[in-house]
Length: 193
Image (cartoon, rainbow, N blue to C red; front, top):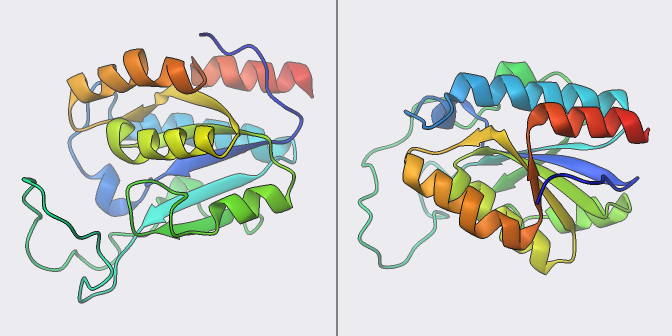
């Protein structure tokens, strides 16, 4: 479903656009293209006085607060490099932005994201970030379950796996909300403000 409307109280939520994540190999969009499109969205939202939420994933140095459980995914060994969890420079230096640190795939569980949004009367979120099939999809599902209208900026997200990205875009996201391009969202934002 194409993007048809943005509520008066819409927030932009950017997932894991941090140094250690944008350094991974991404498909079908490069991480640089995702950061560029996300920065354009953030600029437009700030210009219209709408909230921008920067979500990052981070863990204690000893890994004690990392997601546990049995799975077949092999976690990389050792400690991540210094600064891996810092938001990319293209999105920083805006004190009005909301910062959320998560320990899970999605940005709602175990964080104050829902509280931050509800305090501001937010009814809709526009989502972007890396990785489409993990952090973005998990957050989109939870946003839908929390009753938010969900819009997904398809060219402002990417994945380490092109098939996983495509599956989220074509099979999952149409059930959760509307999907459009950065340009479409920025144009709609300007037209409704």
